[in-house]
Amino acid sequence: MSDSSAPAPHKRRVRYSGKNPRRFEDKYKEHNPERYAETVEKVLASGKTPAGTHRPIMVAEILELLAPKPGEVAVDCTLGYGGHAQEILPRLAPGGRLLGLDSDPIELPKTEARLRALGFGPETFTAHRSNFAGLPKVLAEFFSLSASDGERAGVRCADIILADLGVSSMQIDDPARGFSVKFDGPLDMRMNPQRGQPVSAFLAKISPDALAALFVEYADEPHAATLAPALAGKTFATTKSLANAIRAVLPRLNKEDCDLSIRRVFQALRIAVNDEFSALDTFLRNLPACLSPGGRVAVLTFHSGEDRRVKKSFEAGLRDGVYSDIAREVLRPSPVERNANPRSAPAKLRWARRAA
Ligand SMILES: C[S@@+](CC[C@H](N)C(=O)[O-])C[C@H]1O[C@@H](n2cnc3c(N)ncnc32)[C@H](O)[C@@H]1O
Image 1 (cartoon, rainbow, N blue to C red):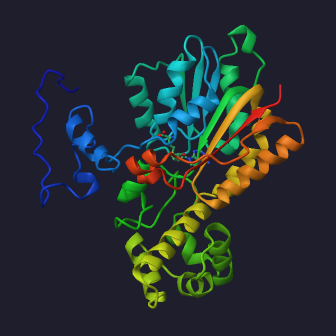
Image 2 (image 1 turned 180 degrees about the vertical axis):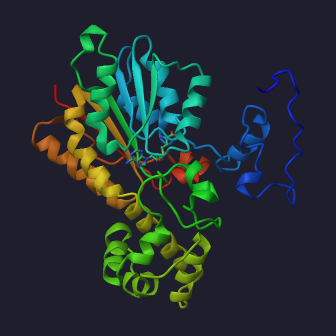
Image 3 (image 1 turned 135 degrees about the horizontal axis):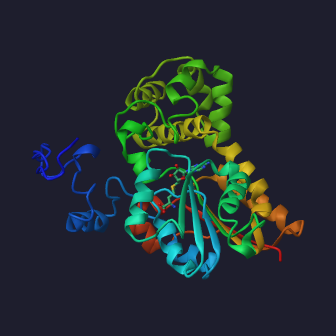
């Protein structure tokens, strides 16, 4: 048995070269925002995202569109760091609840603990590790567990649904997750590392033709035909080794264009190993059945393949009378937000309202 009165063992401060830590794991102050608020403020003021956190995008716009009210049930399908959830939750009180889903088993418990520490107890906030493609089943379980509260018993719908697609800054910035070209790490990119295969295994097995098609379909990559035969069937253990191989295949491109190709290839492979488009298609198909009459949904997308799907689905729903109103124009982050948080720049926001 451990002696709880014993002093905690002394830990030496992390050593790093230079004035500021560069490696994710050395940024211990950013990983402890409660203790080092001043450092975190400085990082935010420089337009960066403190390590181990995520800056929620278009919060004011999303709150206005979703208009959360006391007593309502909200689902945040992509809980991430809980930035949006943290703003929605107080507006549901008294009597409302928020169900937060995320497929990431590494970050979800940290976010649950963070939101609990902010005072959101199990009576108002539930965190659940799940893919949002399974939303109808998750909602049915959620309501059956809370079926005791009379009027909601038998109901399977939410008043508010939010999906902020793609990856969080915690995932991108952690080299161990293998999402980023900027940091060397294992070539993985799975949001749930307990499921499916890492990008390294995926690339080792795929044919050149299938890979070329995937680069075009998932990322509009103009050099797909040149890149695919050089990468398919090969083994790349790390993010840097894949990035270097792409550079070697495109020697005549200037650095800027080459970096764009690298980013697009990484995006296409991430979409593939996480099956992102089929999850989104299933989610959009199920959405009307998961929203109560008059319920609101907002979806933040980060590239054209995602936005196209959301736009088409909402327009079809409006034509069929499933939605009473939808976003006529896509909404974008303000210049002030894009400047303060450059990661918000590609975001596009669309919304829909379920017919009453
Ligand atoms: C952009 S982040 C969300 C950030 C969040 N809105 C916030 O304010 O912190 C996207 C999150 O969605 C999760 N995610 C992506 N696809 C998912 C899916 N199909 N099902 C469930 N979660 C998913 C990722 O693991 C990631 O944590």
